[in-house]
Figure 1 (tube, one colour):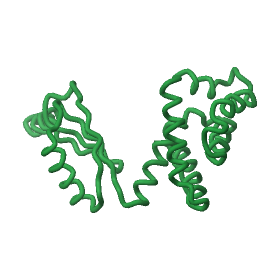
Figure 2 (cartoon, one colour):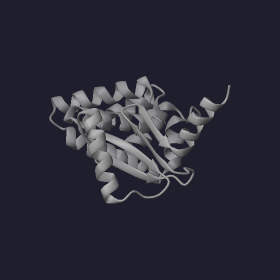
Figure 3 (tube, one colour):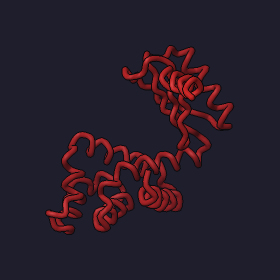
Length: 176
């Protein structure tokens, strides 16, 4: 995540907190994220220097005006104006991270070779809560490239308990 994305997210988060519109902003960012996923070329268009800046900002307004709070739209227009359109997805992720941090929640992305059972998920969640001292939610995904074990990404850290990582450690010990 870039420093720029984090700054925009912090600005929006502080403004939303002042206006007591945190939930509305979060929902608006969900709407924007969904629109960007459904129309992958739209972000390329917003970032294209071949299209005049004002025209790109007008496209953004046409797509979202009336669908999201004005504060979110203004921030996004500012990002396009300053040439940071490609940072929109990162800004959305940074906003969510801030909301979780401030609420005392954490999120971990968990990658495993096979789907985890509910009992395994619960045990992992409890271990992570104990380690990080906060409530955690898990986003569990199956990664067919993994041979076994799990990899957890949370709070800028990677906890790698995959078979590949363990074999690499053993290889490092055995090689001179």
